[in-house]
Amino acid sequence: MKEVIEVSREAGEPSRIVIGDALEDLPALTAGRRVVIVTDSNVHRRYREIIDPYEHIIIGMGETNKTLATAERIYHELVALNADRKTFLLGFGGGIVTDITGFAASTYMRGMPFGFIASTLLAQVDASVGGKNGVNFEGYKNMVGTFNQPEFVLCDLSLTDTLSDREFAAGCAEIIKSGIIGDAELFGLFEKHGLTAFRSDKELLLRAVAGAVRVKAAVVGMDEKEAGERRKLNLGHTFAHAIEKTTSNFLHGEAVGIGMVTAASLAVLWGRLDKAAESRITSAVANTGLPTASGIDAKRLFKALQMDKKRENDDIHLVLPRRIGECEIRRTAFSELEEAMPELAV
Image (cartoon, rainbow, N blue to C red; front, side, top):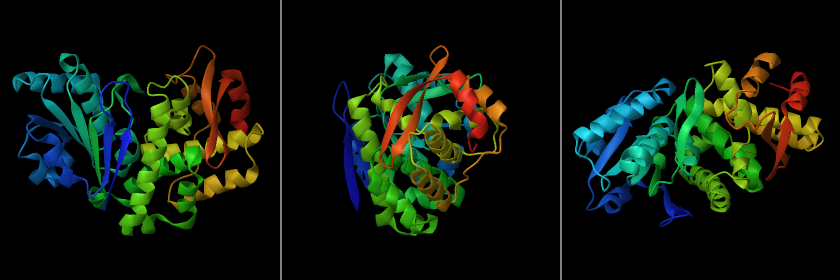
């Protein structure tokens, strides 16, 4: 059971996303190459039989390790290993590992080939696909980074079996997001099925993951470096990043779920979305076991919003749903957003 989706790149062959029984493709994809794996201690403990045959670098776990200091440590270890531009760097882990591996590979010796084995659902449908690589800086998410797509991403669905329900649900948030952006049928899966169904039915999960990757691939193919259309992939993320800046109580996917509900609420307030569609979005998020509100004071959240790295002077580009399967990018003055904040479900 497998599906392969290609994401176009400005230079070189398309990025190859393998979904399903994907690990069996690893030997062929790395044949004849020197491979160095970057992973974290948790993934290494669980998958030693895959990792230990290769040279490997183990980094710390958690968002606090997604830093320039960790990238520098990877550079030091690559130098010690006499790695060169032809060495293949393989990130094996969740979004933090894939982000920092892509960043290190893109900057070491001005660029080396790289790919990912995405071990979490969130990484499979979002972090590892599309070529955004980066590290956090002074508390700001992904403030330093590159656009550079991996040669391949292996999304083996068996790897999600070790995730907690909370981590799995966090990954589902990004699939729901993809449905709202560009696939009403994909969104509908989360109205018909709850978390247990996606966890127990690999064919259903394959449909969901492949659907999300297809939406992202189509958007990235039109706008690889986020000059316009790709901003739609930020649905829910502007609010999510503000939530994450304000509190550590939520996983990234949980914050995205809240962010999508908030964006829908704002779209209704501004007459861009009907109330029925907003209710469907809120119900789909809740049906997956995700929170729908942060409980953060609107003034605190707005202050964090003003620090968003995507702001342009006194404006910010917000992504708002128009209907299920269609979104718009709306350039918004912070003064207008501030006025709306007290009326939103945040």
